[in-house]
Image 1 (cartoon, rainbow, N blue to C red):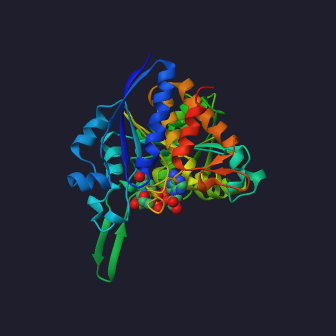
Image 2: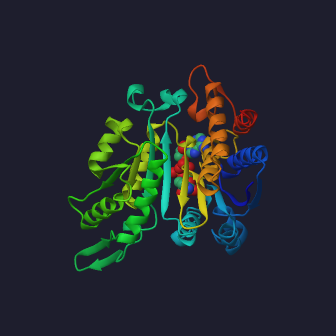
Image 3: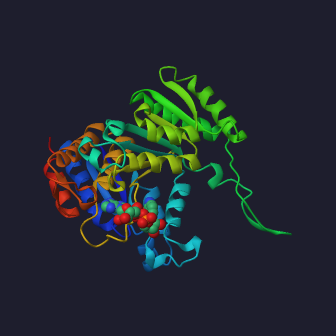
Length: 358
Ligand code: NAD
């Protein structure tokens, strides 16, 4: 029996609407499995700015650090867009990643067959796609120095620096190889080794790390080719391992193959507490209307059970419930198609809870 604490950071926009659905699902499967989960709500993002003046108050960071996992909704919205970059709600995400040492971002892009019609690609191209993007999250060009914009005699110069160390590459490569062992045992490492020295090192170190994973197939692919292959033949991919910048871009492309941004979960992992959140933002355009798709949030709860607590059966139970509810034709507006039944966030949540027991 597990006895665990989860920091619950609902955030802004649709966050507080979809979070209760995920918490109810986690409570239900935990009860069924005889596990005790304690939920610790804390403010983050815009709401935290309104209440405390800061997007990531100390108390919230403490709750995150001292919990066994963090479940996050989304942050941000037009109300806070005028603030200086350092004070904006989105800074809370970077703060949490940095403070919790979350160096690995896992984003599964799996197509629910019932939603094949929602993708912009042809059904025969996307059928059965099941990709896991493993993105390095705390290194590379987003953090490298020197950086900044400086004056030159003729104008200005903008600088960012792509930096990777062997340690950073080895630890993210291990995450990808370990994940592949629980899947189809194929890793595609994506780089730009024909142009960038840091990518050359990336390729060498991934190859060296692979020596301990001979049961997993490894191939290397240039990022431009990978972008093309994702659209041309996405079924060829199992685990996609890549850098912070390339992963940022490729994971959005992979996500959109599956049709809707509201469906997909993510996990950010490090040495200790992991953070789990849907891939979408706070969707201010639909907030407060009871029409946000809660599936990405609920599926993030399933990832939390699997990756943070090792509760595979409970995670699978949630994923089966999602599958069943979709198969029965229930849809939120963003994934509706002719012949399906459009329901609100709350009702979709109720239907999910009904189907959690199988
Ligand atoms: P977004 O993901 O919030 O929304 C993009 C589009 O997808 C919108 O039309 C929205 O209605 C729709 N959408 C998103 N989630 C949905 C859901 N669950 N169900 C149905 N439709 C959904 O991205 P955006 O509009 O670029 O950003 C809005 C705000 O969110 C900004 O302040 C941005 O900075 C922030 N943001 C936060 C995160 C995060 O918290 N991790 C991520 C991205 C953006």
